[in-house]
Length: 170
Image 1 (cartoon, one colour):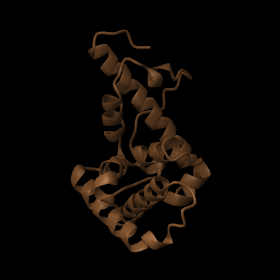
Image 2: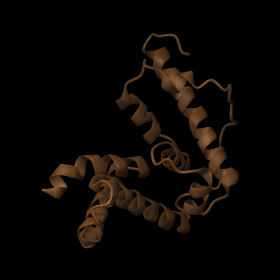
Image 3: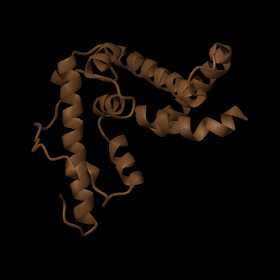
Image 4: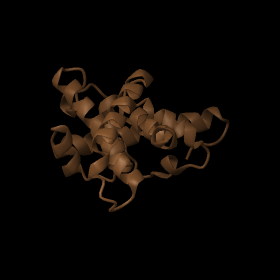
């Protein structure tokens, strides 16, 4: 019953932190193993769904750290090839009502994994750049830079989608 009730929501978290759907299913499986193994440690303080969410985010971050150690993922921005940051200070394009939630999530999911991870931790998990840096083993400057680059890339992609849909980009 627990799986049936929360699997879709937890799968959404796994997809946010993984490079593909197959990996997300592995994370979902590992997350539920953790939940069932530690269900007795839930003390009833706070929401049960929040407790679950923390477990799944931690499982995903453990996976990313393991991939980083194997050299599969690079979080350090200085080691990544990327376009220069083009910020105009206007985030209106990121808040546009001219793009669906599903389209926005697809664009976020298509970000390079390092960008996507920092973006997710900052935006969805409400982590500070210091917390992100500690979690991922990178500098705070790298966290800020990856977030900024992710935001700039998203803005560019959102405007392209809006333009494709025949509307004026903001």
